[in-house]
Image 1 (tube, helix red, strand yellow):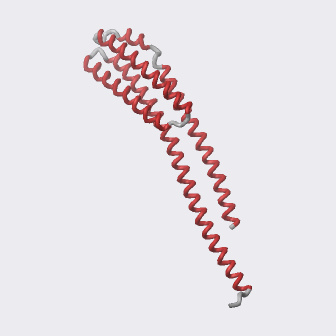
Image 2 (tube, rainbow, N blue to C red; image 1 turned 90 degrees about the horizontal axis):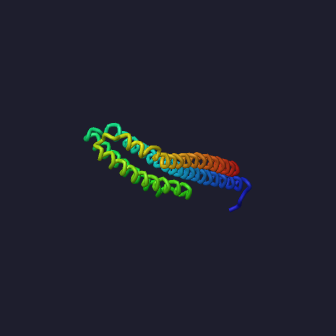
Image 3 (cartoon, rainbow, N blue to C red; image 1 turned 60 degrees about the vertical axis):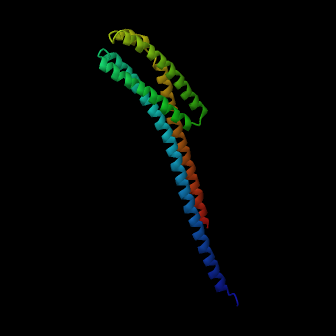
Amino acid sequence: MRTTVKNKIYFLCGLSVVAGLATTTYLLHRAALMNEESATFTRGQIQKLNDARLVQVTFKKQVQSWKDILVRGSDPQNLQKYRDEFFKYEAEVRSHSADLQKRLVVEENRDILSKFLEAHQELGNQYRAALSDFGASRGIDFKAADQSMEGKDRAPTDLVDLLVDKLNATAEKSIDQRTEELATQRIVLLVIGCVV
């Protein structure tokens, strides 16, 4: 069979269509993968930040429970209620922190969380001593208990706030970098698609 110029042109056109379809399929697949990778990355950043905020809020609830003990602890039922609440929040802070520790990969953030946990443990020991004295006074001498704990929650508060701020800044920076990378990859894919 004789190959004519016309047949060669048809063949080249068909080959171009097949190559264009294959390239388009690849580019669409690659774009979908990039979007999924970006979504997974973003979810991970947001999860770490949410976990840190959960530690932060739970710790602040624990501190509030201490204040409730002092304000309402002269009533034995309220003393028990807020004491139980205080220890519940303390345990939750430890549990949420352990979950967060597993997710943190940046050593500086792991160190901040470790320092927070040490400060939280020490604060817990101090709260227990003050609570024992407060209980011995049958909930009457709240001023002594309050004075013994004055300002002692600041160090762990500052550490957990610092951790949340750092994770927030890291998440924003990482998401911005990821967005730029995706934009660059899309342009490259678009150029390749136009060339083919």
